Every structure is written in structure tokens, then in C-alpha cells.
Image (tube, rainbow over all chains, first blue to last red; front, side, top):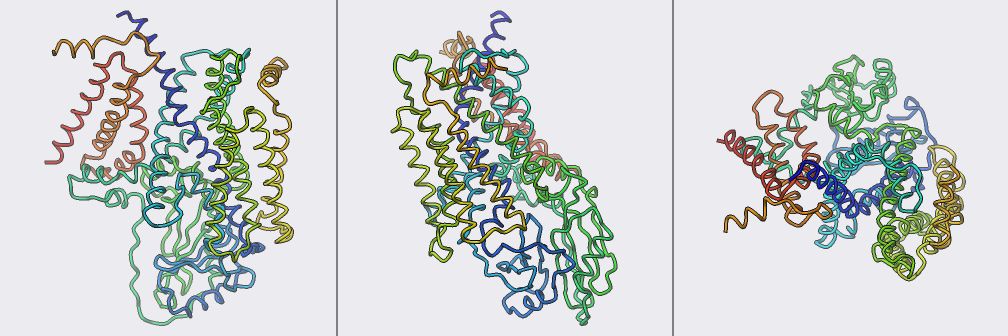
Amino acid sequence: MFKSDASKLWKQRLVRVHGALGLIVSLIMYCALFFGIFAIFLPYLQVWEKPSRHIAPIALEKIDYEKILSYVWQDALFPKNNVIITFPGTKNESALKVSHRFSAPIFFDTQTANVIQDEGKQSFLAGFLNQLHYGKVLDFDKELFGAAWSITGRVLFGLASVGVLSVIVSGVILIVIFSYQKRAKTPQAFFVQRHISILKWSFPVVFLVTLSGAFMNLSLISSTWMAQLVSQGKESRIDAIIGPVLFVPEKPVKLLNENATMLPIATLVEKARRIVPSVTLHQARLINWNDQSAQIEFKGYDATKPFLNGGVFNKPSITLSAVDGTLLAKQDVMDRSWSVYLIEATFFLHFLAGVDLLSRSLVAFIMALSALAVGFGVLSWLEKQAKKFDERITFYHWMGKFSLCITLGVIPATGMLFALQWLLPFDLSDRLLWQKGLFYDAWLATLFWAFYRFNAYRAAKEFLLAGGILFIVSVFLHWFKMGIFLPSFILVVDLALLALGSVLILIALRLPKDSQTARLFWIRKEEKR
Amino acid sequence: MFHKWYRFLAVPEPNGKTIGLFRILIAVFGGLVLSYLSMCVLAAFNTPLKGDFAVVGLLYNTFAWAMAALWIALSPSKLSALLRFTLPTSVATAFLGWTYV
């Protein structure tokens, strides 16, 4: 066999692997990207979706912690040691959360220091969108049906993300070894060109996010065997091996059994801030409270060192004595083992913990472009299939209809989810089940509609139009129910949804009507450039 | 018999426009076994850095799977695909077996 032959075969296979595997994983990847964009804005949506969270923000020093704690101490069922206070502003939550490992959390209004009646699972819009993002779908119950579907969905998304990693690597090699034409003459070439020109820039971000996603959906599930192989059969939990590296061990503080008066938490917050000014405080843990040995441990995020802290594993902390406010211990961002930074860096773009709205919007924008590029990739394959019929008959392919339902049908279904959030009364029993059920029904209906409409362009226009209208309707329903509420980025969410709805309607009006005008639509634009 | 099998494996396919079931199976499942065991080898040494290497192994085993599968699928012939799976896997297995006892 000649050398050039081998290289030709290798290139052919590379193209085939990229195309075939890409097509298989594309729609799952699109779903993960689409719902992932909503998950990026989860902190803002979770405040927007709950009437009880329409609270104006307040400086941490001005909160009446003593009133809040006296409520907690009076609750006979709430554990008293290692109580965790999560400050408002953490993940944009507007309420103050008091929680414990072994108890349900209690939420407090920061302005009045009164207990909030939390909506709980009655309002779960942001959480549900996040579950759709990582494949925890159709978990209607905790019985066999729901459990089986939710684990299947997550493993499926995990396998797809491994496929995506292969597709990314093969795609990068393809870009390096082939040169692609700048000017596209056919729609297929146009789609390929757009697919490349977007992903050429965004693939590193997509890669990191996919890798961390694969870790959560596959590696953790399959870690038992690794734990056994690595520890010569001594351990069956991977936590026993990586736990000491990833998590700082907590040593119990000895109780002195002498009552003492505690410094006000507001004072301690102020002290902590003075010692570590660059750290945004997220939570405080109260150890041995009301005892002479009492301590308070603050944890937070240091925004000056992104990619190195903020996620699950590295949170800078500082421990003060609650009796006199002396500094007892301090853990900086850079005090940890190297593998902690590796995992933090890999996860940073996925979790975006503590990251502000502007940076989140930037990541969301990159992800939206990448989702569009994935769509272009599928479209280029469909155009190739359509060419076989040479326009003698209308192209009607199940993959085309299915892709139409997944990529564009999801938009009106999600719009439905948002509209239902303010349409359904909050005291409706099984509210979440209704909301989820109607969402899935709407999505399924778009599949029927995609098959029913002969002209895919017309169906696409209708989906976008319906989606845009539903998003706008959801904002007006919100205003009707809650009034216009400025703080905590709630109005920003309203305006963003209005903008999204308007853009969708605009695209619906601009898109071509049928394949004949579509050809002109894509190509003419190319010639203008 | 052996000759027939050898010819089936060693003669390269005429073109690479399709991958073929044999390669797909070896790439997906062989790649999984190969990558998982190699990542275990990373963390099998009993050094002070064991925990750190276990983090690397756990974090990157999906990526290793993706790379191994791609590497196996792109081999010049079926025989080399098989060898790309079996040889490194044997080495990793032997090593893990050696540390295990």
C-alpha cells in the first residue's frame, strides 16, 4: 500500500467520523446548549420566578441577624451546631438562607428578618431548566418509572458529551489539515462555512464545558471500579482517595460548656471583610454558638483569581472567634494542591460560581453562537441529502422534521414554560407536574406540527413566532401579577425576556418562506459581503 | 482458517467513506477499556501525589475515551485497530495486576 493511499483513507475516515458521530450527538448537544443558556442565568431566573423572592437588596452589615438566629434557636427541631447562614447575593438569591446538613433550610426576608413562606417545588422553573440541561428528564416520580428515566437521560447526555469530545478533536484536525472556501456558492457550502467560522473560535469554551459535563454525568457514576483498582481493592468509594485532596477536612472544635455573649454577626462580617477585602462572602458557619469556644467560619469567592476558586472545591475561608473576634485560621485561594486548580479551572466555565451578569452574558453569547453552529452542521448534512432529489420533489426527511422539532420546536415549548409560571396559581396542587407536563406536551405537539407542515420553512417561522409571543406574554403576566419590581435584577430578566421575544419574532418575519427563496436568502447575503 | 482471518483483518478497506461495524465496536468498547485502565495506571502509584493523580484520572477519563476511540477508528487496517486496542490494554492490565498483588 502506498503512503499517499493511507493518508487519503485516514482523511476520508476523519471526515466520516466527524460527520456521522456529529450527527448522532448533535441534537442532544443542542439541547444541552439551549437549556444550558437558561442554566447560566439560573441565579437571576430563580429570583424572578418566585413571588417570595421579590425583596430589595440590603448591605450585609444591616441585616438583623440576631432576630433571625433567635428564631432558629427557638425551633426545637433545627440542629444547633454548624448552622450555615448563606448571605443574600450568593448566586443572586435575594433571601437569607439558614441551613444545616441534616435539616430543611429556612429562608428569611432580609429587610424585616421574618421567615419567608418558601414556594419550594411549587415554583421550580430555573431548576427544571437546569435539569433539562443535564438530561434529568421525565422524572415525574421517585418510583421506578421516574428514577429509570432520569438515570437513563443523564447517562445518555454523558455518553453524548464523550461523543462531542471526539467530534471537537476531529473537527479541530479537519480545520488544520483542510482549507475551506471563503465564498459559498451553495446553501450547503454556506452552512459548512458558518459551522466552521463560529466553532473555530468557540471550541475551547465548548470543550471545557463538555469535559466537565462528562465528568459529572459519567465519571462519578463509574468511579467505583477506579477506586478499587487504584487502591488495590481497599476502597470502593473514590471519595476516600480524592476527598482529602479536594476538600479541606473539618476538625471538630471542643465545647467548653461555658456560656458567653457572642459578638453581633454584622460586626464579625465587617471584621472578616477588613481582613480579606478581595473576597465576596457567601456563607458563614456557626460553630459551638453561645459557648466560650464559639467560632464563625466565612467562605467566599475571590474575584481577582478566576479559574482558580469559586467552584465546589476551592473556597477561600477565614475563621474568627465569635467571642472577641480574633483571627483563628485563614485559608487563601493559593493554599491548595495543584490538582484542585486543575479541576477548578476545568469546572469554572461550567459553574460560573460568583461570576457577574456581564461575564455570564458573554459565556451565554458564545454558547448561543455554538448552538447555532451545531444547527448549521445538521443543516449542511440535510442539504446534502436534499441534493439527491435535485428539487424534483419536495425534500421530506424524518431527520429534518425531527431536527426542526428539537432545535426550533423547543423554543415555543420553553416559552410555554415561562408563561405557565405566572399563569398557573401558586396554590395549585401538583403545580410543577402541570407545568412540566404541559411543557412536554407542547414540545411533542411541535413534532407533530413539523411532520404535518410540508414546508419546513413555514413551520420554522410559526415556531419562532409562537415562541416569541409566549416569552413576551410571560413578562406581561409577571407584571400583571407582581407589578414592575426593579431590584435584584428582576426587571433586567423581564427586559431580557422581552428582547428575546422580540428578536424571535423579528427572525420569524425575516426568514425565507420556502426553499426557493431560501437559496436566494443565504447566497445573496454572501455576495453582499 | 488462520490465513483467512488474517487476510480479513490485515487487508485495508478500499475506501474510508464508511467506518464499518468492526472498527466502531473496537473503537467504542475497546477505547473505553483502554482509556479507563490507563487512567487507573496514572493513580496506581503509591506516592504522596496519589490523590492528585486520581483527580486527574477521574477528570480526564472521558476525554481519554474520546481520544482512544478516535485513534482506534482511524487506524489503517482492522488488524491495526485491534492491535491499537489490545497491546496498550495488555500493558495497562499487566501493570495494574502487578501493583494489585
